[in-house]
Length: 531
Image (cartoon, rainbow, N blue to C red):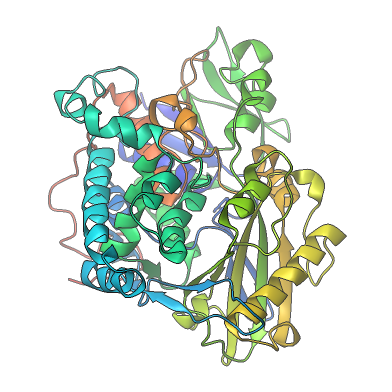
């Protein structure tokens, strides 16, 4: 008799869970509320421009390749991955009216060391030590923490972990900002090493310094781009899921997780249709799953649990189709405000507001990918960290969003124009859409309109993060950004694997073993084979 599984949510974690379960012999049906799969990694098109509406950095490539290998293929067979040079460009806040000189960050130890030394005497050698430590921390995280379900304490009791405790303790108790500031004086170098905390849904003043491991990824390993955009990543994972036998249903919102004797037995769709199964996996927002799909008596994480949790930042997103070329911007560009601490206080502090000027991120995929904008035009995705506060209003198309949101967008466009030396930027915009925390809440069910998921503070990381299984409902599992191991596409792929590990009874810290002989042929569906 076949085992049946229902997966709620068609973001990358739900799609990956469906793929891995089907690979393990489960009969899998996935139900996604929207018309298309993708979740946060969505897409929007207008007038010949196609925008990714979520993730835009392809890091930790070995995690993607491991997932694809588990499913009998490889990332090289599924995606056309392009290395980016520079990895990203930085514009510090200018001193006067003129734009500031850009700083190109090129991946590779020698190039990074040269950049740091050019700005601060002795910083090159200190960066070597910093990146050696970041590499060690990354290897420890991958081998001992990220793939651990924490269903038992076996992994934490490992001699390999115990032997690292003297080194781990200060990395967990000291902030990333303090860790960086002890080693580097140049404010821009500090910002380059501290800003990755934002991509973890946190602030460098709050994130544990263990997360300096992120600098190993961009400075040592490099940054890739999947040609066609991140919708191609979603399409590849969906293609793999269907090839394994999973069935994907869109426009199929789930209203309730059905239980019997404290065990998940199926789901009820919004149209009243009931589907039964042996297990249910929700990759939807954990807060929405727990507080709207389950009765109060069966909630592992009830409303009171969320009162003291950090939702991470909200985001103001600007999708801009611009006439003419913009060589001033790299594929990835970061603008760093001078008052760093105030900037993050505006987002994460007590008296929150949309920062002005903001430390923000601009993605120009048209620098690499000719498919995302008409010839002679540019595609810009701008992310401005802001408070996770839906009351600030929704965004809109063509300036039709809430006044507070559109006014902030106007300021951001003016800031980019002034800092990067593009004085006519606003006049060249042909397509404009804004997305705000209220949109994340309404369209994705995101708790408090958070853009990424629960922040990676110490109290919300590793063993302290919500687990991948309900403690009160048997046969109910979770995947996605709010649960182990955390935020980002690679973490979402790992969260899917943690569900499978739990079902297999695997409480170790290692990755699942990959099948032998993967990658010899072309593999599943369209893509690229570098062999």
